[in-house]
Image (tube, rainbow, N blue to C red; front, side, top):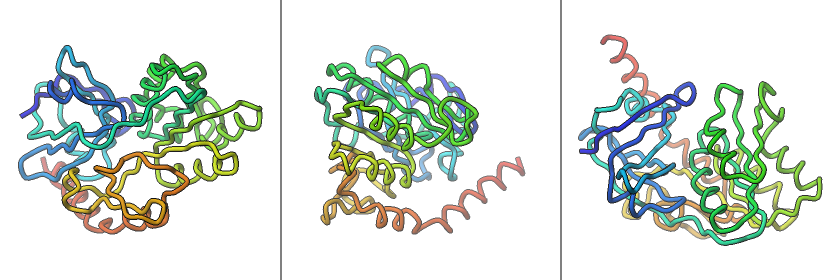
Length: 278
């Protein structure tokens, strides 16, 4: 059992949760994730480790309540417990001094972009961050991203805050202005990551994306998280989760992620109905 130390909602349905997990806190590196199970009969949920405090023995995850399990997790408060956590899992982000590195987070993907931005800054890069959301109310980790950035930009789809437009448009604006970009990391919804790949492709800018396929065990045994990269089958949990964006088959990834939508909706609806009865 893992005790929850603190919780806070960062935006609607997006909650920051700090959990006791001392061994994971000591070993985790940027880009890695955990498999978490809220209760003993629950499903395993992959969550990126957004931050860690080795001295206090805690890790931080940021959870968007989308389906039954994440909505259930977001009902937990400080003092509650998590049934079990496995990690750190996945290959760490490849970090080196590229020169000018752009870390892009779309929506809750910013929770994944943040630890990598921290690592890129420590490696000596000139770090530019682009933090995108649909509206001002959904912007998360603004202060944290600015603290590790040489330049930081906020974009909102509706123009309610920062740059009015998508993260792709801000990235293109930087390129058009003559900014020499050596590396891009993009994390967010699949359409966003796919669009970023097409922005950087003509300029041959090294671009990495963190993929979010269906995942069951996180150890490479089930094969559920297989993705196609450079026409080869890879497992996101052990070969990734980060891959070369210019080699990812995003269409197949999108199709696979839709496989269980009816079952996911049924489970979420049942959970919501149960909560209303209470």
